[in-house]
Image 1: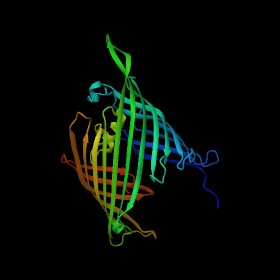
Image 2: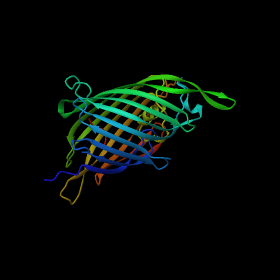
Image 3: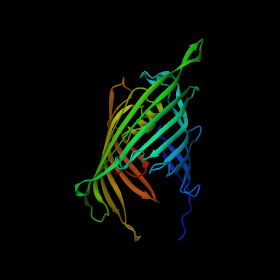
Image 4: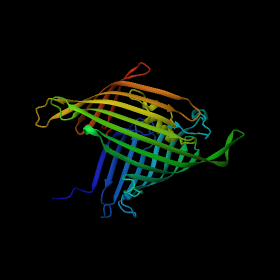
Length: 345
């Protein structure tokens, strides 16, 4: 038997981490760069309204003095014109009249930096980056993070659960400007430390399968708690805002979020699909309820968002597609199309 070629080229579409808008993506990967299993990957993403693409170059190896190996990634992310100038005092960012455009830097990630005899799954990373706003203001960020999990556990009656947690901390080094006769000039810098922590739990409870279906009816639960100190970088609050959305909401218009509690409940009902082919096929009908409590910054009150609805799931030509009809707390009925599989443990 011949081995598969070590080079792979894939393409597709996905949602932006920072704005929730659609992006096209092309990924190239070489899985045996130097003959010892080293991996080199190049990823290029671009949205329809983006002024420039986002590019990531990643090199990974399973050595580095530990069992899990390491990854080194150079990135240049075009974020788009999200609110970007934060004075570090919890003031509304839009009042500062500037928007964040891109971030560039280097990330080093270690797989299983903690002994697997103590913690079975862990990741650690260090990051150095620079952000630039539309007006040309720059900010340096040095950060690190430690994640543990997911820890998976089998429950009675074929149920299962998982738990994962992550804590990160860093420092923003921001220039201080003085407006002199209508022209801003740099008069120094200030150091803005911050910390972010999150914990996620998920459970799947299967019931008896429906007639003719290959999979059982399942009740799926997901909850995520995220908290942060002041001074969290604007692109991270933007990403938290996208993640703290509910189905039926507009992800492009999600506000920045510094702390949130996100919950989702789904009842997944497999539906067999008649076909003349010898391979049995089925789709899934999903009844869901989403809710979120979120806070923009430590000076802001918590706000609530929620939605309920029904959705359809079907894999077409190998692509998992989903469509949800949602009724939001504002009393509006909206459709929501997406790609990817529903969460699992």
